[in-house]
Length: 183
Image (cartoon, rainbow, N blue to C red):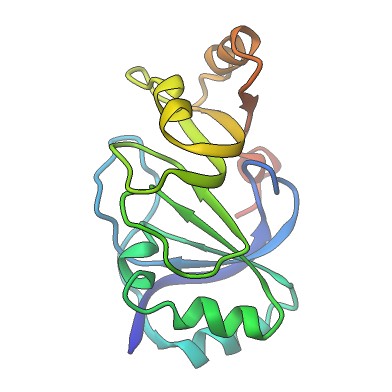
């Protein structure tokens, strides 16, 4: 099977618990949601086998790999071989998902960024974009996680800070990569 890939690149993890850590991002194509604030290109640029993706990841000399999208579980749910091969090669694997498709692959770290009802009830972290209609506590009640993050929508940092100040069980997550001006 070939995976539909948008891009593979090395950068700084900009969000959540691993913020600031160098990572190789494997952005898989496609998403099952259409969020009006999304700034991600979901189009397919390449079809790559597990081996081809692993070879490209190895070129970046980094042991932390983030599988993201779009929605990576569209492809990984039916074929977790990419996760298994990268883990077998010694990589620490993080998956960033919207939580609508169950995760059956053995990732080391799971981040859910929920936008609609989820099929996953446990994660390492939950990251909620603080859009005008967002209800972070709705997700805190539905998803058991070790860490909960609020991320401001667009440049509305003051609203996010205000929310965290009123709800200290949440942590502020800024897009460090954008602040630092890196991809």
